[in-house]
Image: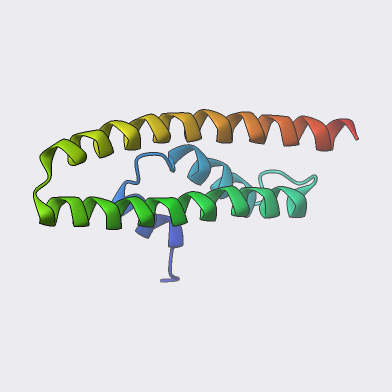
Length: 105
């Protein structure tokens, strides 16, 4: 059985990658025949930049948890979920914008 990258990511259930995973899965499975290369590049940049930020958040969370700083941990949790909501909306907006831009041009 071939290695399934998305199956591994879905097991971790990243909180704000579901939209990106959906669009990446559609593109990699050739569901978008037009402008496929451009969309792959754009979505890869969006996805991996978010993955990098997620790793940073995990490292910060672990350091706050180890030091038992509950006040900073609360601020971290609030900022993290605010950030994930914002990124989800921005990613969706970017995708719609680029799709329209490539279709029109």
